[in-house]
Length: 206
Image (cartoon, rainbow, N blue to C red; front, side, top):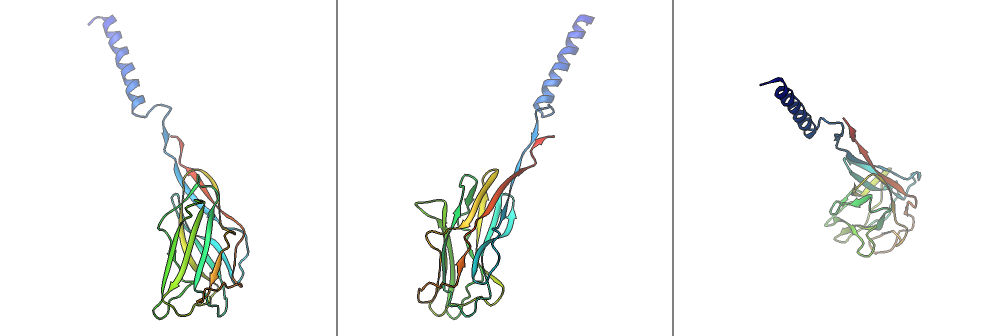
């Protein structure tokens, strides 16, 4: 092979090598995949006996688990049913996880009673999550003997970076009722909002 053909062959090999390197991610334009995380920050409302408030329970990846907690001690209240809505401020940032409602220990079953917890988006307003936690089987309700008790746990997924408020909705009015269906007026619900923030991490160039 003469020198002219040898030079052309060498140039062709170098060019092909550069193209191959760029296809396999060694070029300057490659980047890491971003990971979405989430965290819940509760309202700053101070704990008071008889107050129902949203608190963080756990976080994993883009999912947060939030607890509705009632502070005690409340005395000999006849709590039989909790009914309230949780308001999602921005549904493009935050989504309720269907089927995630789990009853806590605020209502205690005695005799033939059972405890049921349900939560689902309002059909006419998807920003409202309707929450119902109640006893079934008759008999009496109960109070909170300790400093606090969990009413229900709910899970939410962050969908993107950003912040959405999360709060107990003031309307329609949240209620706690006794075994006869009468509202218990000494229990109040937090009127301030917490927030869930979606956080992206791990992105950028290598």
